[in-house]
Image: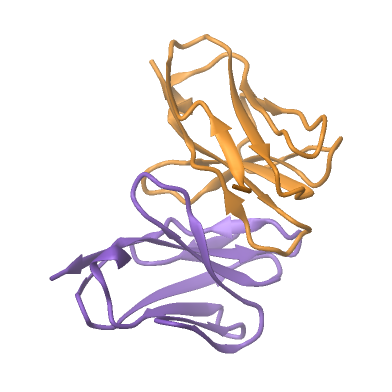
Length: 109
Length: 112
């Protein structure tokens, strides 16, 4: 079966760095997405990785290792507004997205 | 402002009633999707449409139907609502098979 695993909840301090991991087992691979979802709102796109390596976009970076079925989202200089759920999703061989349950990130002052 | 509009935002519904959730996008995206999101679970695909005139079943299609008469509209119908259909429903769209998904603001449905 297809499976996406990510931690349920993480806590970090304002100004610090946090890494949210995602491991996956899917039928084929056509890329991995990270989305941010604030409580009561719609998910919004953060990043897309299809090749191995690190993609940096401001305070957020996303890493992919296809051979290990592994990705992480790195958030630097954490701000209170970064408190949200972070969703990992893999696009399978049929170009359908398989979603993880999301990681709720709590930022403390 | 370009994007996806869902209606209603929130609805309480008696079991057995018929309900249609509306979704309209003005980005001219080919592909549209309906997901449900429940606490502790990932987004689950209900139905999708790769282009106007075609639809397909996702992971949890039972009890739901969709239609895609044109590019912009993709309504989701619950023929006879049951309490297990209490959820937050998101409509999404993207251009082609590999682009990022754009989501509507969601419709919170409670079936009593």
